[in-house]
Image (cartoon, rainbow, N blue to C red; front, side, top):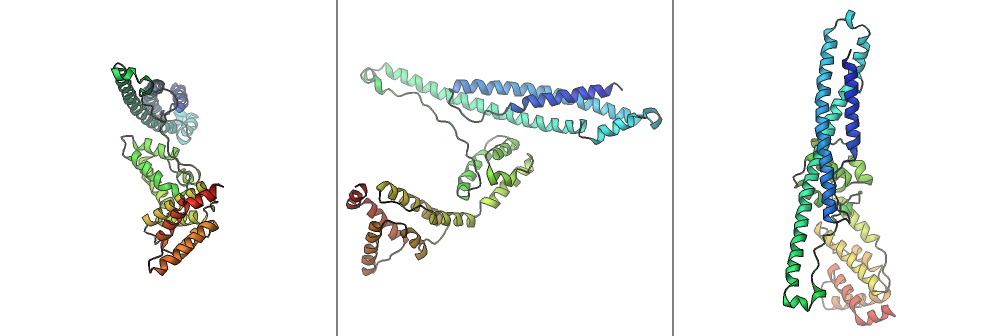
Length: 341
């Protein structure tokens, strides 16, 4: 049989191609390099991906062709004719060898094509960024020749430098999930393939969030399933409310310094507003007690005096009134002098 060594050789070549191309991933994040260097990297990666795709498709076609010929030939032989070849044939069909290689080759080709598409999109984005910088530099040059610019050279605007685009990662903190969900909506709205979106989703999760979806294979149907699982485990309104209340309870008590009181106030305000966004009734005596029990004595005494006065005036004392008095107290000049001593 001359087909067997051909099949073995082709299988080894295919495996080698995809082993070498495993590192050819999309250059998805900006670095500290200049746009020209990033563009060169993306173009080089795209070129290598294109070459790997073409070679892989050619090898897969040959592998498929010779494998089919081999199967037909083995099926055409009678038991008396192939004898011991039956053992090899059954081994070939029943083990993860050529058939598995064919399936894996198709999956790897799909992955490489998705990475190639991402690189092409990145190249276009980098070109647009470079054109913006060139336009700004040209504008600055033209301004440098105006009479006013000669008297104000040191104030001439510099070319726009865009910071790196940071990938949002989600590790399972319920409080971080709303922002992560919004970031994934941007990815969903892009023109990238479903495979690329699912790959990005997996790369953007870690910890218990990654554990929730790590067993899902990279298929189109599983992408929606992965999003549904994350929503189920981390996107519940009840979970968010519980996490917000726990955060409120665990806020460290502020000191008498202005900075510490300011941070405590801002954190309180943020948590209360998020609870209100979830339609939670924040005008609650227990909740107000959670806020006041950590305040310094001077601030608490002022708030208590104001509360008595407000009640004497038959006005409403609620959580909003408490926060207003806290804000006034921390900004009071007397207390500010006291805190800074």
